[in-house]
Image 1 (tube, rainbow, N blue to C red):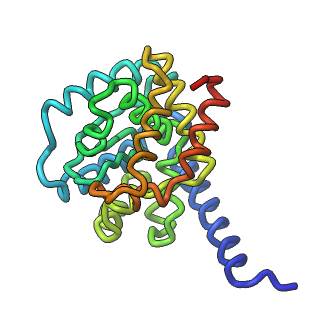
Image 2 (cartoon, helix red, strand yellow; image 1 turned 90 degrees about the vertical axis):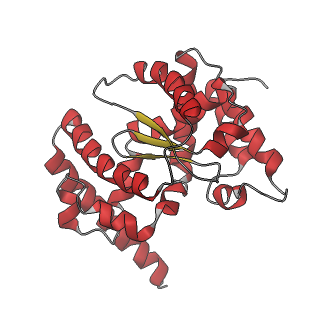
Length: 245
């Protein structure tokens, strides 16, 4: 029985991603060189985000995020990883990471946590995990709109025009279910070893749940619709970190 066009397309897309990833790794070299290459890509993407952002966000929020991010970054095993946390001028309660450790968090998300350090530490840790586990760069490599040649040259110069065309909203979409679960757990563990309460991740997700079904003034429904169900994420965090409550 024929598999059908969707199956064949999926196979071709998968092969393209594997080829692009292989080409990238061939050019990027060893792990530390790959990190530097990802930083070049992320830096160019970050410029696009800042171009499209209206203002630089609240200085108060920036100080808060910097103070939380510092102990998290200090617990990352590979010291070649560097992280820059910036307040994204957006009305949606969102956060996302670019390759190389550039992380943007919207004021609406900070306000949703009521500036709770444990919850924000888990949010930042989650985004750091996407960088550490290479989810951020893999997502870029999976884009068919980017040519093999541009992806095989780790400078990021071809990525910025592409990001301008697809818009920042693309970055707010979730990764695969497995990658989101992995980032939840690693991010919560990173927060824990940095001295924060990993249950902050559970409370953060609970805040999202409480807003579901409301008038949704923050535009949260669109954000959550691309992520795994809250119950599944909470259960996975509890099981992996052996948390009660």
